[in-house]
Image (tube, rainbow, N blue to C red):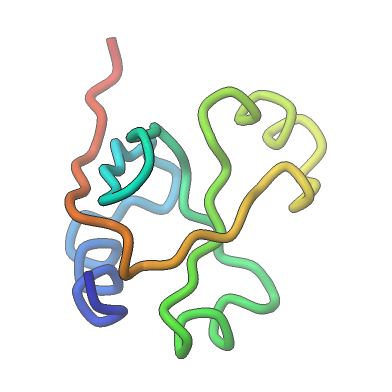
Length: 86
């Protein structure tokens, strides 16, 4: 996906604190949270996205430490959808 498509998804769905199912071309899909950090603007210009995976989500929410996130290339993302709470 392009940077614009991902930004539009994030803005339209208003997913600031929503878990998203993210499908990739060349890796298994994951559930995670898109972060807005100090470097978000710079990363977005390169179509890179800081995402906290579901496995690290509770640790991130407790500490707020961005080191629990990983950076993913938007070109590898094929599909996204908001995960409904169970």
